[in-house]
Image (cartoon, helix red, strand yellow):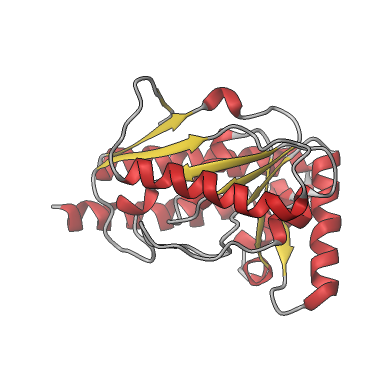
Length: 245
């Protein structure tokens, strides 16, 4: 049954993505906010379809810690789910993503139009400076920069070294750095076809102290995210939570 429900989800996911991308093409010629609204609608529909077909619910912990203005959201990355959900949780997400994704027809056009932040991992110092300029522009506009500090998806319980890019972005200005943990990989695994029924938790933690030296920021970020992720994977559920699906 899980395989059949997963197949139904995947069929709907790719169909919805293709149809919406084509129908929304004219929005690329309009002000940026229209493309942002289309991507947010797409994300909400995907999560709704995930619940309807696979029985997956999303519970958001610490919702009150999500700022409405500029912020750096540093999230654990276990699943493709993590790249979708933040479009629904903040008003104007600016994801830090691989430059290669911008070359994908339709998706890349929308990602570029809404102002996602590409990074060329083989581009050296010039690529890093370009990423920082784009991140600074997003933060100055009051957007929420979403970055996955590991730089790749990791399996539940796996520890992947955190990359220093988040520290560089945090050093741009005074925007808070907010750690986020998740157990999404239990439900929607890394490169996995099967989506298991259950609850995905997204836990927004306390912002890191704004005066934290850059040399201490990455270890503190990793400790916060990995500690809370381990707690979620161990099944230590909260007394109060908020459904977002």
